[in-house]
Length: 182
Image (cartoon, rainbow, N blue to C red):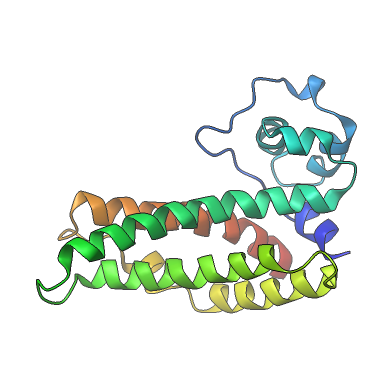
């Protein structure tokens, strides 16, 4: 199953606000087992132990989806920030290049994750993962300009925050993709 491959090959990272209070010894075997096959077992166990749904998981699939949900949360936050900033700039000329590039990158990633999560329960689970994987591998081959060129010195704090949110999501994806393709 593709979900197994995703979690097995993921080096999970702890994101702000999701650090678990539990020690690895308190984590259920359904979390510890899959996390022991990642690049960072401790971070994986801490992240997933802090999510009540993960503690109840009996298969790897839901754990992989929770990881993707963490990435989706980053893109949702960045998208909301970018939309708000673009609205304040409307009618004031061309928006800054980094804001345009990061907004486009966030939109692409956000839309792909939204499609992944909106797939019906009866949909082919493996197809859902293959479709997402195809997009992400393409993303890795040609990193978005937001990742490679932003932020720049002329960016204000809001633009830097948007770029940082995208960079966090990208780093999580890169851990998946580098291990899957490398």
